[in-house]
Structure formats: C-alpha cells, structure tokens
Length: 248
Length: 248
Image (tube, rainbow over all chains, first blue to last red; front, side, top):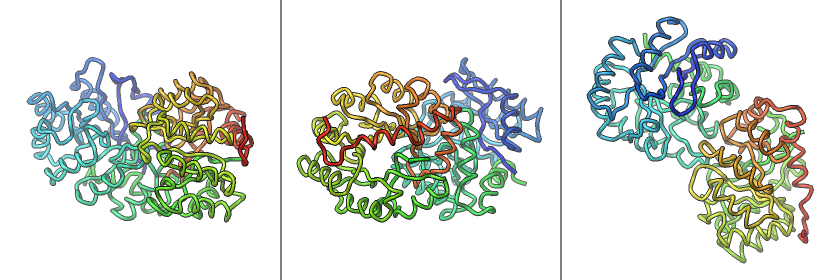
C-alpha cells in the first residue's frame, strides 16, 4: 500500500494549490492508495475554513484520505480551540504546524499551549521542518524533547540545505528524540534517507510528497529507487505512515 | 550518451570512493561523470591527487575538476595549473560555503581568470546559503564575461527564479540541474534560457544519479533538448578546454 503522508488541499496564499479532483486524479495515475491531506494557508488567512475543506474531503472519501488540522499558534486561545474542534468535531488524524508560513519558531513559547492541548489527544504533529530560522532540526529537537509523549513528523527530512550542512543535526534529532520521524519529500541526498532507515530505524521515515510544493511523481522516485530491501520500502511507502496516523 | 556534470569522489567528509559513483553510473546508464572532492585544495592535503588517481583508474568514465580555495593565492594558482596540465583536469569547482570567499571578491576573480586561460568552465555551488546566491555569483559573471560560469543546483530550494533570471541576463552563465527538487524548473530554464545553456548533473553519489536522470526525463523536454542537457552541451564545453593553457 502506498500512502502519501503529505498532500496539500486548496489554493494557498503563497501561490501553490490543487483541488480535490486534481489530487484524486494524480493518486489514481500514480497508484497512490491513500493520502494525508494538509490544509493550506488560504488567501484570506483564515485557517478554520481550510480545515473544514480537508474534513469534508475525508468525509467524502474515507477510504482514500486522512486529514490534518492546521492552526497558527500566534492566535493563542483561538488556536487552542481550533485544535479541540479539529480533533473532536472534524475527525483530524493529527495537527499541522507550519513555522515557515506562519512565521514562528518551532520551539517558541507561543507553541506551548497548542502542544499541551495536543498532548491530551494522543495525536501526532506534522511540522514543516528544516527551515533555517524557524524550524532548524535543533529547534525541532528542542520542542520534541520537551513533549516526549507527542509524536512529531518532520517534513523535508528535517533539513533543507543543499550543501548537506544540516544532515548531522537532523540525524541527532532522530537519534535523541524517539518521538520524531521524518518525511522523504524534498530531502537532500537520497543516501541520507537510506542511512536513517538502515542505521537509525526502519520506522523513522515516511514517504511524503508535499505536493504540489514538490512534484508528487518525482518524490515517489526517492523511495522507488532507494537502495533498500523490499520490506524496508514497504514500511516507507505506507506502513509507517499508517502506524503514525491511523494506529489500530 | 549521458555525461553527469557534477559528482563527488572523496575520502574525507562523506566517504565516497570512485567505485561508489561508478556503480551508480552503471545503474543509471551514465557514460561519464565529472568528479570533484568535497574539500578544498590545498587546505586539505591530497585532495587533487585523490581525484587524479580516480581519473587514472577509470579514464573512460571519470573527468576531473579541481576544487580549490582561491584565498590561497599563488599556491592555489600553481595547483590549478598542475591540475590542468599534469592531471588533465577539465574545470574549476568553487564552493563559497567551504572557502568563505565572496564569489566576486578579487581572489575568486583572479582564480577564475586563470581558469579562463585554459578555457576551463567554473562550477559554482549555487544554493540558498550566503555567498552562494545566484545574484551574488552573477556579479562574478559580469566581472569575468569571458568565463563559463555554471550555477550548480540552479539556486537550490528557494533561489531557482533568481538563477534563471541571472542566466537570462548574462550569456556566460550556464544552469545545472543537480539536487534541486523541481522538474518543472528544468522546463522553465530551457524555455527561458535555451536548451544549450542547461546541463544535467546529479550531485551523486549522495543524490542518486538514477533519480536525477528521471527528473530531467520528467521535465517535458523534446528528445533534442534532452540530448543537449545530457550530453551535447557539456561535451562542447569540455572540448573547448585547452589543457596547456593559452586560450584567448
């Protein structure tokens, strides 16, 4: 089974976007069984309707989609209330935090009330990681170590740096925080994904495309051509994501 | 026929002996690769010799570029001359994150002007980090209009638009596809700059050459355009190198 652990739904303030019909067509074309839908930041800045859009898609296609709830920690009590609504009313399988687009540091105090609320639901938190000033792997590691009971999923392999300068810190994050896993999308150097899978743990890497920011078909190549065993690839393709987002 | 315009062989930093890139070239159907170290000569002893030995071992498969720290002045110049004349290298690699030289400072420009004497291309690491941004390297292209300046990684994750922009402005800039995660950027580069100024490269072995070839094939190019990226363009550049110097 192939699960794309990160697919954006909606038209984003920052120019990218895709409709539900486009997502379904691409999944069918590429043989993707399920996807975790992620709300975008819309042009009107209102995240609640974006969360509704994802919840509606999941309700219409429960066999194809899971959905995340997105909040902006700068909104304080409103964000905490949206976490509650997301999990209790919308059926979200996890929370999405985007320090890059919402402009907060991943380990800032402003995030604490949101994560304290998430901790009551045993739901995972996907975090747009690897951005130098807001979600550096040391910052993700810092916040993950303060919430050891919360499962964190770091986007971009936990590191966005085309010199490979963040790989050491991303690996340290994974080695010191057993509650962190990484997504494959956009990761610099495929041998980093192979190294983490074989040396840190087969359960620590999830296939994800972050489509349409990255190209879904191209992102599949990172797993398809990986120098890993069939059993390891099965975990990356979907088993690990289901374990995190849809535990039995 | 495929020539990979940017790969690495080294025993320091990442351990990637020549056999690693040869194995991945065979998997990807790549005929020849341009290799360079991860470290600068002369700061790291034996760097150029390691490349020379690899080329000597696989003369039909590997082509050497000299990665050198321009700050070393005369010593750097003599080393480059040795690399070109004794080791038959074909180009200069500059990585400003490693050597901390602004791409348009005098030491770098002097180094590039020496490369011009051999008609040798200059491959810059061009990503998102300070000293490697396309608009910074463009200043070098202006200062050295006779040099062939290759923007490795085409601006990385966040600066691909700038990379294409500066290539449009300066005819001596050539774009290179490695590691940058967007197939559609390759298409855009070809449409705006022309297929004759875009090179296929992988940044292997860390970035899997098979995946990087797949990225170019996904870009929606014509057969002729693909041929230009994979082979014709870099062959033209390498064929114009004058090993003994004396280029205009």
